[in-house]
Length: 214
Image (cartoon, rainbow, N blue to C red; front, side, top):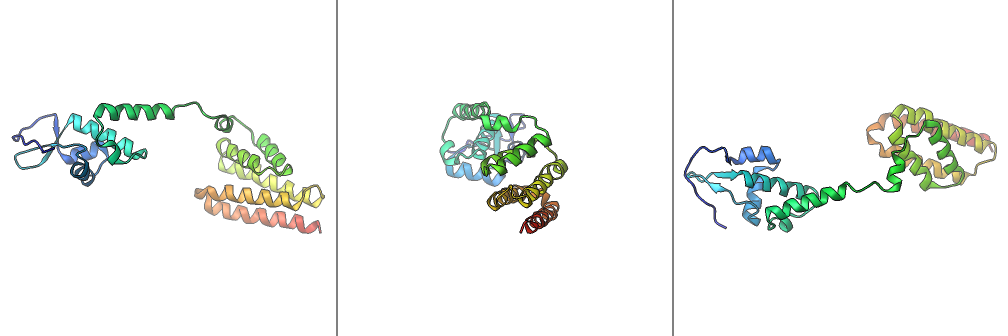
């Protein structure tokens, strides 16, 4: 396709590349590249050879950006008609609104710290790492940072230490709980400083309890 040259004129329906960049979130470089390589949008030109985009061009670029942001290759979608782009965007939006899976629904169910504590302890006793991870994920949704640490993880490891000391818990259960908990805490990157201190405290506490058992 060859660019269409038009005479200079002021029009509400024609926009400069700078303005279109602000509206679509695409850089001028990206728009030029898409035009040159894929003819995704071919704007009109002023007598001074400046790109001028119509409202349809802008809307098409917005659709293309949304699709490429969601993982589509520009080479795959650039040749589609604007109506096809719109249908594709709507289809993907509908897919994203599908009902939550049962596991995801459970994560959003309200739960108290005590309920989560009991669930975590039960998972540790049953040596069920998947269930322990599930309760931690649910705790992350239901509890704030302070409650998660103070009312769940610390009491849990205190109880693990007591059970070990009393001979009711095997070392393999403690190792599983330690591994799952460490992985969960380290996934909360924004908590780094407090987690490092908390993790050291937990390890020292558990090790003391275990040592007393020998």
